[in-house]
Length: 220
Image (cartoon, rainbow, N blue to C red; front, side):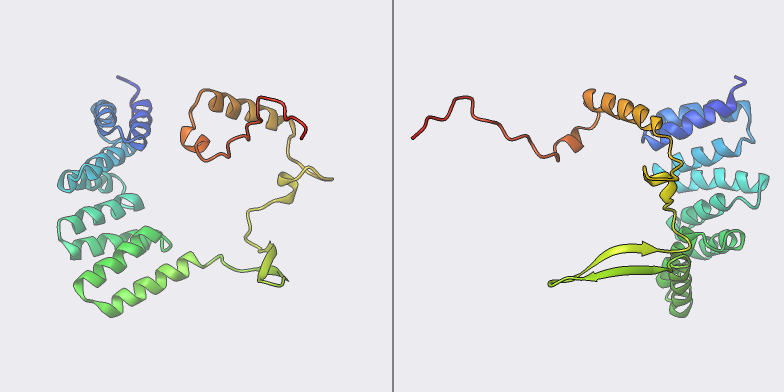
């Protein structure tokens, strides 16, 4: 009691791990302490939705929208609940509400297009798909440098005004701002995880060392 925010975050973490029952236990306590905790309501609704209980999940999202009508995630997830209940018109309305708040909400655009296809509203579906493509490609611009080689062209460089690459953070050359001592901590943490055997699925993909013969080779 008194730690609803902490309980909400623990519940979210358990949900991400797929521990639905444990997540719901923490979220129930959080909502008992604060029934208007939108984070807990959203996570609780998501638990129910992942457990294929859309009608119960919808109740949580509706409570959120009563508290905050502009919460785009609640509109989107409520649309999913309506689609699962075959109420496509209501689902479309909530997708449209989500897009009114965030016109580039890709999941809402995508589900809106699928709903139109299901209803046979082909022109509306085409417009929604066009909007989806436009949103995903809005920042796709720039230059690509190619080197023509005998068998095929090879990309040797890329440049864009929207790129997230920053040379001063990614290199060890003159003018860099990357703190070199940060690498030591990363290497130590990652090394401890490897030694603890936390990445068996990756270890299986690593090339195995070549074993040298134990005996000496005799001269012929």
